[in-house]
Picture 1 (cartoon, rainbow, N blue to C red):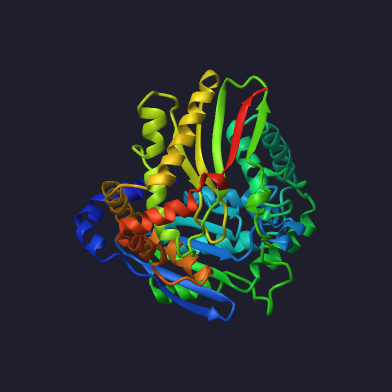
Picture 2: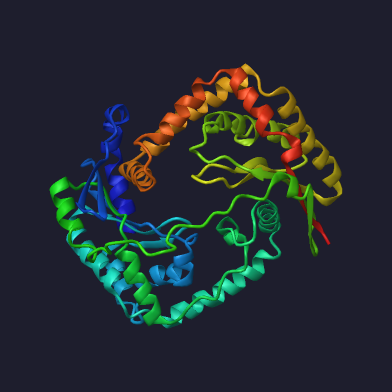
Length: 434
């Protein structure tokens, strides 16, 4: 990493000199297939001699198939051989490959100097073919998982999120997984290697390159990275998402008690909107005004006016499936009743009166300006393009959401607020001292 930081610093003047041109015309992703199961995305940019490689596989922790086969540890342990040889090779190159299984995908990502492309490619192939997994590392992970779960039982923010998700979603819903006790981590290396091999062969896999590499070189490297694909994906690969709990069956209030707590954590929860919902552009505007900036309605009422808290904001929403969403704050325990009253008052007024034209304009400016963060560098463009391709979304999907949001007239935003922010649909969650 030190090597990469030094290279980036050395090339900053070159980037600055071309900043105007880059802002006007950021590099565009190019996509093609090397076989029916494998897509390649390239964002070519030769201004800096650095390349990012991303390998994505269409399975994550929400998949019943993946959980049954311990895919999370199977994928992430492959960089750890007992002798540490793979990690020493990475250290010699000044890189640190990232291997992570998230909700909907498994990904290996690495950024490196362009001159090291061949050597890094060999290292990646060796990681993906490694079958000598370090059982000692797996045992450490197992213990860390146990300790983290114990620690989370005393975390007010975690317990608030847990109570909210349990109120909104049914038992067994994978959207609750990050708040439930984790399963026992497997240390059966043969079982894990077999699961990893299946992940690498799943149809729908993606290979991405960003930076100082052209298409001819990218295709040559891509063709040698992965094993032959499966003809058909296995059963149970996609997550099973039952409908959320019916609003009339949700509790109106939930209280969680934690020993020796000196603060009270407060939240109002409901099921949020996915990005594909027709109302999502209106949600972007409303959420920014309510709790998405330092001078939001929540922050002004609970922080700036009387110093009830250091933080008042909204959390959740977005993604491609409905998830938890709502305002959240915390305050000293003796001030809990006053803070709770203010939190409800903000929501009631927001629901009843909506926002002003000045607030709408500020939110629109923010949303339009934020589009550039998705084009800040070639890898940012690559990540967005691969996400769009993974879920069948058009290129520039989130940019168009921002543009639609900014173009909405005030009356449409306020009509949405009246529907969506109904206080009767919110679950009040409190984490307080025992």
